[in-house]
Length: 302
Image (cartoon, rainbow, N blue to C red; front, side, top):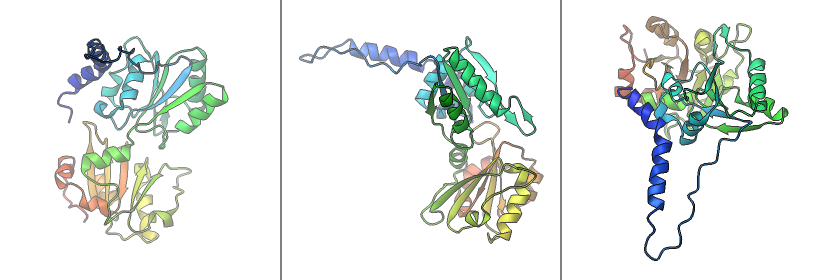
């Protein structure tokens, strides 16, 4: 999937330099009869004392927005999460300070309140700060809490959206998140366990003609599948668990909602992973799905 990761990374690093050269070259050759050349408009500077909450997308550096790549390249400090792809971390300047603030099950490098305070402290120092998050900062990324902490302290906070994991997983497996014939509604939910249970609106999640994508739900997969079936979702509903979408580690399992927990255990999938449920899973691109499916004894949608 990343046959030329190093080349792509170098290309992204040199993007702004090459773009600037091209702009100067084009601007320096006025056309006959044209108005006097104007100064080239430059990208807005990276203001000091302002924290940028930047979405790093699902892991492929080529899926970064141009703005995200520019801000990373000009950062003095990058506070990054566990889900930021390694190839994206390579874009951070060697001179920039790196602060790991990742969260894994049972292992948080920093509690959220300490992350909030860290961002405020860095902004107070007048540094160019990028808070780099996997996916999109505002989709189960706790970006809203960090924004509020910065605003309460009187500092600028800019949100730079990224491609959320569900969009990356859909693209890499050929599973359309919506479909005129199968899914007119798209629901994102979190399956993060709290007090050993999952508190979700099960009736809403079992409505027909919709796609349900559950983030951070692999540890509660048995509970989720049991509750969905108990609240009326047909046991044969197609479902999938996708690990590491749009990264070299991508791996996926496809089954019915009833058979999904056993299929995931057989495949040995680990977090981070998304659970995708709905008829759209059954119309996904078979070629893409086969490429990321481990050898298993079962069959799809069994």
